Image (cartoon, rainbow, N blue to C red; front, side, top):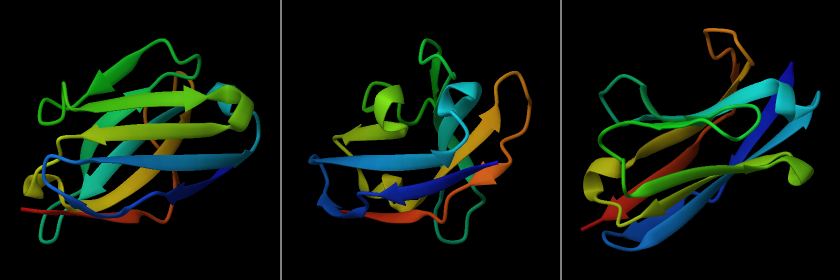
Length: 119
């Protein structure tokens, strides 16, 4: 198991920028793929982006492609989500998640951090 703690959420104006962090503790996080999901009020949780254990493979939801960038720093056991030019539609609770490399399901979750984008 790996413990995940998100930070960096808050209020940002549309067109601004914000960086979320996810600190992982426990076993070496290079054995884990990590990702970001979000849940807006009244909606189901949705995939935002993820990054492979070795940091090579990255995926993005179409809605954030070209605006958000995922990265990880293995030395700091931390994953990041750089959010550029957010829109009010990006307002949600953002969750950090992890899964053992080559597994299918994300089964380690953080507590979430609120991101609110004002117009």
